[in-house]
Every structure is written in C-alpha cells, then in structure tokens.
Image (cartoon, rainbow, N blue to C red; front, side, top):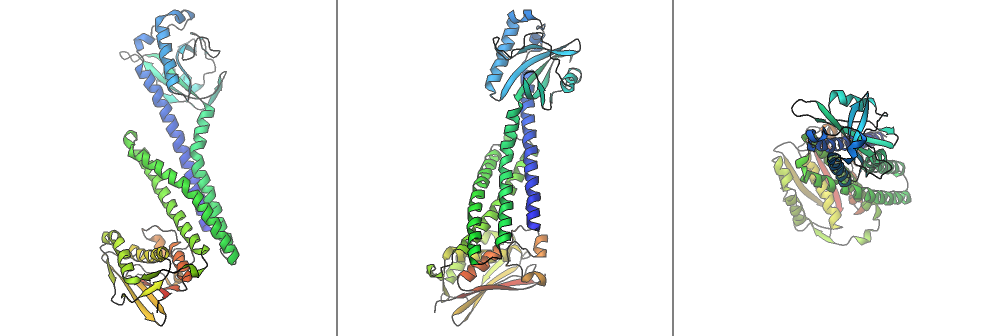
Length: 434
C-alpha cells in the first residue's frame, strides 16, 4: 500500500505542478504580448485621440484601429485588443480591434463601467498586470493590461488591453494537465492490479501479465511523446529563463524514471507470459557472452574505477541453452547492481562452479551489502533493501524479480548471500549442455 500512496502523492504533485506551470506560462505569454503592443505604440500619436465619436473620422484613429485589428488577426487565440482612457471615475474606450460594422465594436468614448479593481488600479499604479477571470457584457475573459506612458513625463497616456476567451484558457490548461493526470491514473490502476493479482494462481498471473503488458504499452507511448517534446523544448531553450529550464529538466528526469519503471514492468510481464520451455533452444557459450556484456558496461564501472574480473573457472566449455536476450538482461541486471552498489575502486568478480548437469554462476562485489532481514525479500518485486533506499542510487525494485523469473523459466534458480557493509554474492544456477 505504501507504493500506491507514493504513486498517488507523486501523481497529484505532478498534476498540480503541470497545472501551475501552464497557468503561469499562459499569463506570462499574454502579459508579454500586451506589453509589446504598448511599447510599439507612439504615445504622441495615442495622445491625439480624444475618446469622442468624432475620432472615428480621424486618420490617427483609423491607423491605430488597423494596427490593433492586425494584432488580433495575428493572434488567433485573442478576441479583443483595445486602448482605454480614464474619465470621470470610469475607464472608457479610445479604440478597439473590432471592425466598424461589428456588433461588438466599442465606439470612442464608450464607458466601461464593469471594470474591476485590477483594471481601475492600473490607471494609478501604471504597472502591467494579468487580471483574474472576469465576466462583462461581452463574455468571460482572461485579460492582460499594460500602460502606454509618455517617455518624457512618465504620465499615463492610455491602457492597452488584450482579452482571451476564458474557455480557451481553460481548454489549454486542461489539455496540458490531461497527460500527467491520465498517466497518474493508469499507474495507480496498474499498481493496484499487480497488488491484487500477485498471489493468485497461474491463470490469474497470466491475466496480470497481459494487463501489465497492455497498460505499460499504453503508458509508454504518451511518456515517450512527453520525453520527445521536452527534448525539443530544451534544444530551443534560448528564450527560456533559468527557472523555466530547471522546470523542464525536472519534467525530463521524472519522465525518464517513469519510462524505466514501465520498461521493467514490460520485461517482467514478458518473462511471466512465456511458460513453454521447449521454445528455448539456442545454445549460449558463456565466456564470450559474458565478455561482451562486461565490455558494454565498461563506461559504468570506469566512472567508479571498479575492476570487473572474469574468473578462470569460466571457460569455453560452459554452455547453456536459453533465450539470449533474456539471459543477457538477467546477467546485465546482476552485474549492473554489483557495480552500482560497489564502493569506489572496488572489484566485481564473476565466476562459476559446475556440478553434474548444473552450472552455478556467481557475481561477487565488495559493496554496501544487504541487511539480513532484507535478503529473503529482494526477489519479490517492488522491494528494495533498506540501505539501498538510502544510497544515492535509483531503482524500482523490479530488476531482481525479473532475474528470478528468467532463472526459473530456464529451469534454474537464484539466491544471494550478503553481509551488510562487506558485500554481496548473487548466485544463478542453470542447466548446462552436457
């Protein structure tokens, strides 16, 4: 249940964070566009407007109206762009972006008595701001306002307003929040399904595997899309602030970790679905097999200056029969764990011992070890040793369960002996070719 609560908590945090980030981005974008319009207007030209019906015949009014209309056309999400002044305790319209024959046009001098305190305060504070959602005679709006100031005196000449339909704002907010919300719900359902079915008989386990496989595939697709989108944003991050770049990197890291969990679940379900051992036919010569695997892991153990040793007991005579990809992933998990939890400048030794028709491989490290109380639980899945959780290493707790599943699928078994703060040895016993 701890896992369920943890996923629920992280999911809610992710949804709230995405909604907050999207809301902030929408407001910053709208405000910046409004400020840009205010900065491009000539205060001297704006000051020629009187806010009276006669303005409609002046060239200044017509030119400014043309510009505002072009701005509205260039920003399809924008409904109204306008200039306002202050007269007798109320804002009024100088000019707006609506065509003269529109039913929604605001003629020069029209009083806007629905103005809230935010808009009214701008005429005194002269500070650009995004207003909260509000309703007037034209509809419900998400708006921003910016002052047009006289560069010489600093006096307020007019206020630029830009309105976006509130429904468009909510639609964008929901669209961006939907992906993490859906992934969060799918993960909760996935974990609940696993917890409910994990102790059932073989038929129910097959059902669980199918459910995990389908759900994980469905989750991986949107996660991969999010990862690509984030990478694209980061590649064009020149216009992002430092805080925005940090936020995007946080999303990327969370997405990468979720993808790792989904991939582990897919591999686990794949192992559980295969029950016909007759399908496993390929012979694997273990010495070159392990040599290639260690070579591929070279970068990870070089970072900690760890030496990986293949014991002379591994010879060309050690041959097993199995699924090459799954055997590779099984040993990759064991060797990667040995490297991950080893201390700097440590040694990882891979050896084997034959007995009759069996061969037992051992992967020994001098790392942090495993507490005695945890040794019997580490192969169960969704479980990590207490000291591993405290270490600065990520993990899902599924890797060793996958190892156990693959060993059993090949007619073998896996176990571990360990001493905390001294090291661990993992053993895999498999049938060998006579």
